[in-house]
Length: 166
Ligand code: PNS
Image (tube, rainbow, N blue to C red):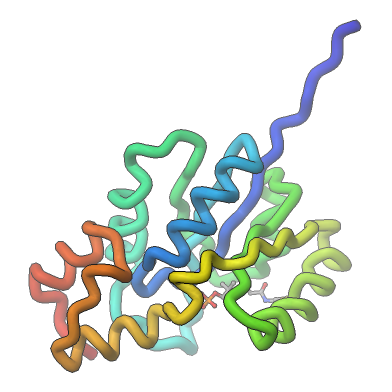
């Protein structure tokens, strides 16, 4: 019997300002579950980023350069549900660090399913990364702390190259 299996594509959306090891771990696990994962780097003009979109994309691209099936793309500032629909993705994958993450994510997951039939798959974060957030990592770095256990090499390199603090 012949049949054509539809490609399973998922989207991992976020600001990734910068990408950290918690993101990395969830994205790598998503890549094990789906044929293709798009890391969609968002832009929200009401948000102040430490890194430009190009810098956030570049750090993510360098981080995943050795892994197949992971694409890094700008998401733009539109609806995530529309972005997923336009890319032919059937699921959004998000990592959960805590019950407050879940409380925050659940209404968005329901909205995205109602808007475009996109399911959200939640992956429990790996315990050693549950405390990580891009905001905290930026603060620790700005105040002189060592963040080398928390971010991929591409991010350390970018910070060492003297990206100005904001
Ligand atoms: O890393 P972040 O900043 O928490 O990522 C947030 C992101 C990009 C996932 C969220 O802001 C988002 O979904 N933006 C798209 C806008 C949208 O679709 N809004 C309606 C949500 S139901």
